[in-house]
Image (cartoon, rainbow, N blue to C red; front, side):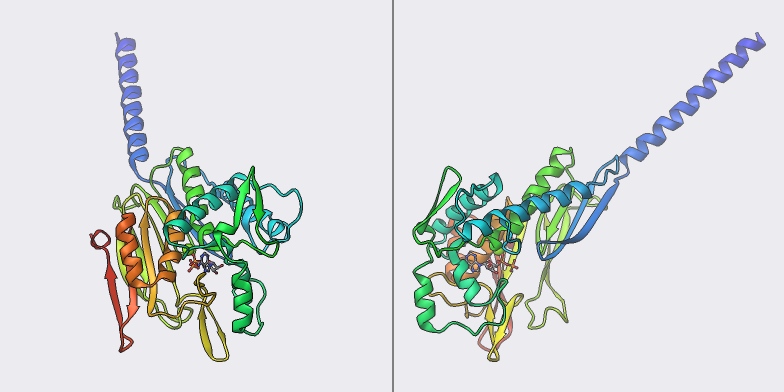
Length: 338
Ligand code: ADP
Ligand code: MG
């Protein structure tokens, strides 16, 4: 009898403990666990935040994705596929990433009437935005000569091999590569069963699900200021609901020559860096590669054309521009402001 009681007490105690443990572990599982990864890549910084009950650290896998993209499309790596294509090395075959980026770029070139064009490479170099710095700005004769090499219709991909109309043509996918990498990392996280995350590289972001506080991820858009290195203020913030956001700004990256500021966005139609009063364009899209490329396209097009195309393509955009008095003004599609 005593034995039995003891036994029952023991069983009850065991059950109670197990229940406690179970409920405790249930609580533990419900408590959101977020892992943050951050560092430098692609000449900028990245931040990744994701919810993963097992607290797995994916920094090794993320690093290898960055390396793979560098080997495919970095202009700063002379052994990358894109560098070899630009040097016309024989027998160079594009990898799946460069093929995808090229196809998406071509589509956006067509839709933007050529405002977005990855064949701007020779102009980007001449204006000094990539690796050759400190050259004098090109004169109009030089620009006219280089314009012969520009045009997305003058290059094609045949079984992974780039065929150029002119051997001096060079491609530059810097305006879409960051967004593409954001998508790649997001897809990797999803393959690990992660549904709550934020991936950001150099200001281009993609999010899914919710943050640590159970809210949709909140993103800030920088105020376009003259000295972004010294001062950083937010123009606005928004909740990102399973979407991507990219911003291109003529204020953020520029070179100063002979006391004049040149934006790093180049109008492929004229061969000159843009000079209009549109200071920044932020684009919401389902994928970050498109948001990134369209942000550059819209910046090149200027505000009126950008607003028209955004409505046609059903993209949400937010433009910051300077009025005649130099004051910052905003124009956005109704969907963006929602
Ligand atoms: P960021 O996000 O740093 O503002 P962008 O995504 O706007 O940069 O890309 C700018 C880069 O894109 C330039 O440095 C240049 O390499 C390239 N670029 C410049 N003009 C164009 C253009 N019209 N179409 C495609 N790429 C461009
Ligand atoms: Mg871009």
